[in-house]
Structure formats: C-alpha cells, structure tokens
Image (cartoon, rainbow, N blue to C red; front, side):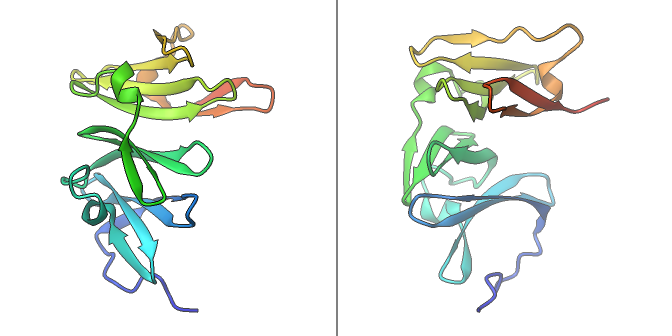
Length: 171
C-alpha cells in the first residue's frame, strides 16, 4: 500500500472532515493555519486542491463549509455561493435561488427525512439565523428557545424519530 500524503501538507491544520462522492472519490476539508478552510481530493495517491479542478467556482480556494449532501454528494458554501459536487461535476445549487448568498454566508447543516433543508445564515454584521427551506420552496426563520442564539450553533443532527438535536458552543 502506498501512502497517500506524498506531498507537503504542513499548511493544513489538524482538523479534517472526510466525504466520499458516488464515483468513489474521497474529498476532505482541511482547516488551514490561517483558519480558512480549503477542499481537497485524494486521487491516484496524491492530494489535489479542488480549486485546481474547479477553477471558476473555487478560484479563491476559500470554503466556508463542505458536507455530505444527498445520497453521495458534497455541498460547498463559498464566497461565490452554494455548489454541489458529484462525479467530478460541480453545479450551482438550487438553494442559491431561494436565499441570497451575496450579502451573507449560507451554511447548509442538514437535509432531514422530510427533505427540509436546515441552514445557518450569517449576515454581514455576523448575526446568525437558523433557517428552514421546505420542499415547496418556502423559507422560514426558526424560532429558537429563549436564551438560545443561532450564533452558538455548531451542528444539527436528526434522530431516528425525526427529532432535531443541536450541538452548541457555550460561552
């Protein structure tokens, strides 16, 4: 077995998130030492920056969020909006039509069993809102419990009964 990390990766910190697309390609998001995130692919025993594969969509190589999406795809939140990747094909995601990505950062957190998309939206003043988009294209802000701020939300999970759970950052 050949080691995959054959090139210098010292610029990548110790936080990784791995995903696989339906074509078997393994992708990972690396947190860089300047706290930016970048997407990479592992192919033919080497690491390739996604910005070199998708030059137009990721020219600045900055990824706010990347996560598993659908059956075996990836969704990316970038400065240019939301994109989905599958089989080395990148597409502007339909969520861009539902919510403006120009003045805010949109981070999709979860697509639940009812196919609702739950997302974390941060405006230019760094105020965060948890939003939900249903299958009819209706977007709504989620009312959070008293004392709970969307700015502290880290992840969202769905249990086997369809209940939503979140992890939060405590101050």
